Amino acid sequence: MYGEISEPLAADTASGVLTIDLSALVRNYRTLQQRLVPTVAAAVVKADAYGLGAAQVVPALQAAGCRDFFVAHLGEALKLRPVLAADARLFVLNGLLPGAERQCADTGIIPVLNSLDQVTNWASVARARGAELPAVLQFDTGMSRFGLSASDVQELALYPSRLRGVRVLFLMSHLASADEPGDPQNADQLASLHRFASAFPEAELCFANSGGIFLDAAYHGAMARPGIALYGGAPTVGARNALSPVVRLDVRVIQTRTVPAGARVGYGGACVTSRETRLATIAAGYADGLPRHLGDKGAAYFGEVRLPIVGRVSMDSITLDISALPPGELKLGDLVEMIGPHQTLEDIASAAGTISYEILTRLGHRYHRAYR
Ligand SMILES: *Cc1c(COP(=O)(O)O)cnc(C)c1O
Image 1: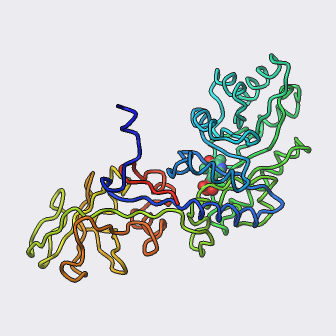
Image 2: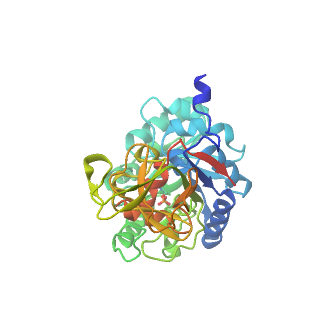
Image 3: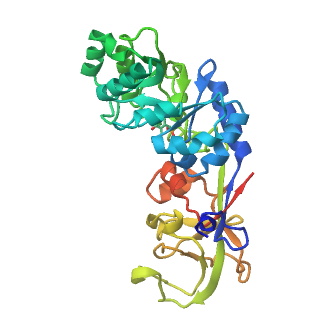
């Protein structure tokens, strides 16, 4: 019975339709891979492929030739293993907690090692097995979040035996400002990565995220790790987005009404109508990933017509001003566009004061999900 609760909702009873275009996803993968040649494009599929469904996204990318996948946590990697091709590799970005090494090694998952302790623990599991175990070494080039520090690297250079048993596949770091090509932090991080890497002359680099792919080829290394660009998000702030939209979100109209001037709309009476207004209530709210910050700011679209959000966003509904439409045009059960050709992921994110990543990863599970 509980199994059924997690089943996707059928189209006719769902509050809306989340359409995920897997052919656009594959097109984006190919666009990125072509731009990167000879660098290999991996795919970052953490957080259930940015909310779009790793169980669908990973097989689609594998069919297009992608063989390298990154998630954040070991738990995510273990869940993904059943859909992974036999010759594909799965990397865990956030490293391993002490004690998790055995399970990681047993399942052939490759950790990104982010501290000296993680290196030590991985190496000792490898030596205990009398086998080499693969890993990625991450350096902290300026985010103060993950990775070995300059003194950690000195330590490894001084005592290379600490790495005995570990086959270093890549030296990795992560760009903090890659979506802003003019930010000098990019060049600083690149220089810092090269400084670290000089201690490991034979290893290859894994550096660029989506934004980094659209910087100079010097940032590409041997393997890049795009996430958001695969899913159609803009990799560079303010630039034309060369990627295809992957997500479309349409939400159902469940009530319409006409209210006089002076009517209060929604929680807190935050909005008071200044004239007679035709309103529609739609069947999604902040529990469905439409941020509360869209209240009195965002909009939906019906055809070409913009329908402003009035009042606060509720948990399960949003009220729209539909006065711009001819009376009777919008009917119960009709769908209005929240993300689509009239309102991009970036549009709705900026109306909510957030980023495309947050919109995608919060898209709820009360929509019918239609994979194309
Ligand atoms: C999430 C993540 C990525 C992907 O970043 P995008 O900006 O979505 O391309 C790459 N590398 C690391 C370490 C990450 O955490």
